[in-house]
Length: 171
Image (cartoon, rainbow, N blue to C red):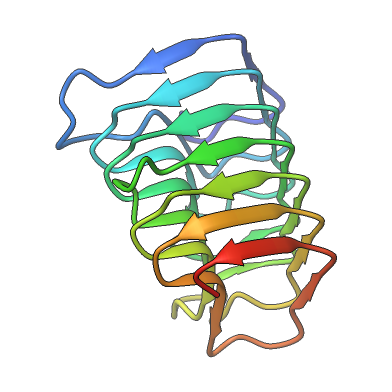
């Protein structure tokens, strides 16, 4: 979806047929969209990806598993005020990161179960472009379990809050 605002994407099964290509759900330049109650798996890139000025979107109550790169990805500049809530993101030791946030500010990540990723459960990092960091994000009340490198990893970002999470496995 490119340049879409105010849509509701719900109750779909989104299965990739080529595990080396594509995203399950992709929103660019879109605001105030709700992505809810979907099952998304077997994509080469991301289960759900928001990029290029995607703001005030809500990703809630989805099951995302076994994608090639990340379960949920917010990247490529200027995303603000997105919410990632109540999802089950299971890497099945295939996805790199459960939630990947780069050059996105004020994202609220809460009440998700994030487990079994090759690297990090939640990854916040700088990204260049109009929004130069992953700043002022909140990671609150998540279960971050059995990821191979870190539960939460923050690099070159400021004013993030990580609290009240259950993290086990690699920290």
